[in-house]
Amino acid sequence: MRDDRLKILTGNANRALAEEICRYLGSELTAARVSAFSDGEIYLQIEENVRGADVFVIQPTCNPVDRHIMELLFLIDALKRASADRITAVLPYYGYARQDRKDKPRVPISAKLVASLLETAGADRILALDLHAAQIQGFFDIPVDHLFAAPVFIEYFRSLNIADLTVVSPDAGGVERARAFAKRLEAPLAIIDKRREQVNVAEVMHIIGDVEGRHCLMVDDLVDTAGTLVKGAEALLRAGAAGVTACATHAVLSGPAVERIQSSNLREVVLTNSIPLRAEAQACKRIHTLSVAPLLARAIQSIHEETSVSTLFV
Image (cartoon, rainbow, N blue to C red; front, side):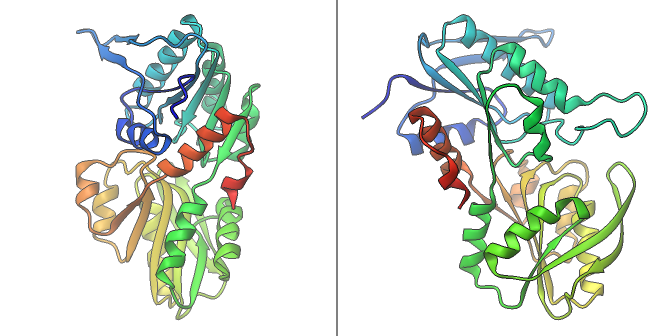
């Protein structure tokens, strides 16, 4: 039976994902017009009654990041002014998450500013997927449900029955994520020690752990220019790995990323649909996409029904 209090909205960032989530929920997207004036200003109108509703706004803040953030803020503001009972911002991808600390003089903490903007706009809670840094949850003074795409990936890789598997963290910062994968896949763990000399340029140093003769699975939260993945794969193969596969939640895939993946020695790069893939990425035979729609749909249902989301972590 359809719940009329549950409303799902989306902007222009990833409408296909929002529609897929609605299919799992047995619901329909609430009608909203999100367009632009000739000078580029966003025009938005919600075309259905949302008074007293429990509303979920699905909007990854992916490229173009600033425009999609503004669409999200305007949707939240419109819902608040239309007397929605509760507004949850569903962020399959959180833009600016990599700028989560002041690591150089005179730089902003952009991830914190985005959090403040969402709260000021009127969001009552956040549902996020694989934040680049878990401490971003602490930037909010409203409830945050932080989901992980790990169950989706683990189900896929278990189905492949890969022999002699070793899970690899592409850097020291991703060890906790890789260790969780290794434990659930009952595989040993290795770490790539790298030094990043400048933004989007990674230099691989050496491998910590035994990868000789083993199939390596590199685990990361996002793929941007794919420099880390390609250099990591090269280092693992030089160390004697039998083959290298990679997986990451967010397919940012900027600049030469797809070309690098296509021409690399990676057997497969497994991504999710948290961010819509460009046409060239969809055409790349080395890229395989898994859907996070069932995971997000179950989380939305649990939040709406006020039940625990902890079962989604197993």
